[in-house]
Length: 307
View 1 (cartoon, rainbow, N blue to C red):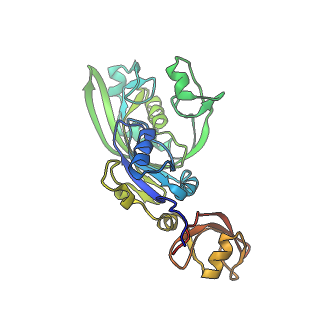
View 2: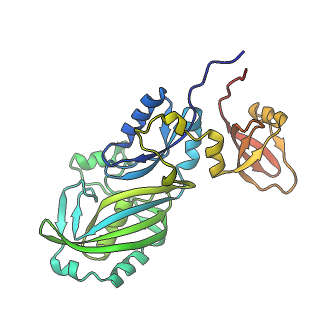
């Protein structure tokens, strides 16, 4: 006898196109897979493209472990024009004098970028999803309020200038900087563009943004949201978990114990930390924590009886 099917379960890597919201893509995925249980490990703005990690079915439980992972972005920062959203979708609030833009040199750009590398205190973008007295900051900005958010600690582990182009945009001299950023979770690339513009006395905003990596997941493995048979593109929960955690191969008896909430005694000298517990069939039991020689489940995947 078998239990009813639990429906699709796994991790889906999507390559978000420019235009639709992240919530639209989640809704599309629900319809494509015929399930309501779809979550995400971080959104992207409509203007942005690139990697979104979705969890489907029981694998939504894994998302909490991916949200805080470091990320990589490729972006274009336009010096010389500031907007109220700090990106190309906002209204222009200021333009720099031609002399200020002309005074930007490669050496000054490098000095400004150098000051933004490493652990920094960053004021998030005013149009972020951070709540202020229960209301999203971006909604307050759209309603005409002036929003000032508290600074937070982030880490810019890599900030690289890939190319620089001087041009004229709507009769305004500008410089477009193509950059690559590797950073901690919680970093706002729009705010990084803003701060580069402030350091160079030109103002700036973001004109393009593409997320290419979240933790151990890369854009090269992502598929388009409208790809055929998304269900076949799901990473099995075990496959996804093993990209993030060391594995623990459980015997049948150990797998049963973990699924029943029992603790396991590990061999002496085992490293502490989170592990992906895998049963003899290669399925993910759940995520377990090893500490002082004892392994205990933090959460277990839903199970489906086999014939």
